[in-house]
Image (cartoon, rainbow, N blue to C red; front, side):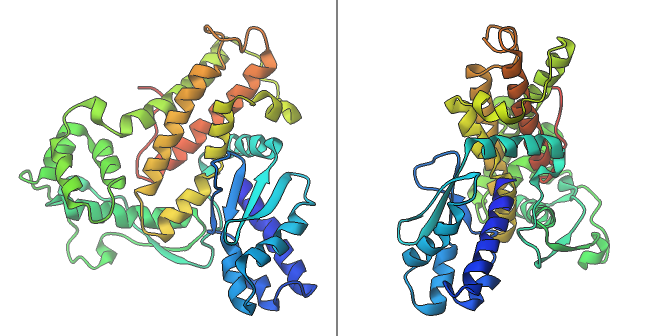
Length: 356
């Protein structure tokens, strides 16, 4: 994945710069993982890191000066199109379109493992079984159970050292198994289903008691925030099934992939997909599980735009019938979307549906 490759390149540059005296020796100990954020301007292939601010504290140089030092060797790397200081000391790196497209192909090949990284290597986390939300007596309790479990799973995916535990090992003398039929959570699970309630809790901000209270009022499928995400996953899956049924040629686009996926909608989606491992790690580190579902909703919306403006199937679009290689490239993108959404939903405790 792109951010993992950027981590490796930047770590190697830090070691070389520290060994050569351009940076303090201690700079070689810094790890860029977890410092990435979207670059100003929203360019799909650009990434910014705040690492220069941390290194600047070692010798009193300005972060902008440190960022300039870090940028110089990165410009020599073929798949990095640009590296430059930005703002007061951020380092902004723009990768080539080939790198962005290759990242999506890697996600498609990795499947559900595409959300994994080593960003939180060295951290510790506890992984618990997914809670039976219908057994919670109130919404704050249900939110806490869901959040604690999800944070552990996110940290595990981001490379943290984990301890597996059960409800009994959490310190509860008796496992909470009886369902209180008077509980608003029980009523919501009965009406909406466990997955819908779990997802609503997962995307609720910490401390949002008023928002939790609104969960009891949801009564329509259109208002279900999980539905568009499941729909996008099912749509990407059905695109691949239709391609098989139509016996569309699935030749490996190879080096042509980047040139074929060149529409604005495709570039935006490629850039968005590349952030999945970073979003997973950030949600765990910040104890903000809500950040992942909201990211999945962005991916789902971007896929819908892509489907409409750059279709892979020959149903009213220019793709497969006229240009099989273009269809093949767009099917790689569909496969990456399917993998990313499935991985993200799994980390909320929900199984992705291939059909709705």
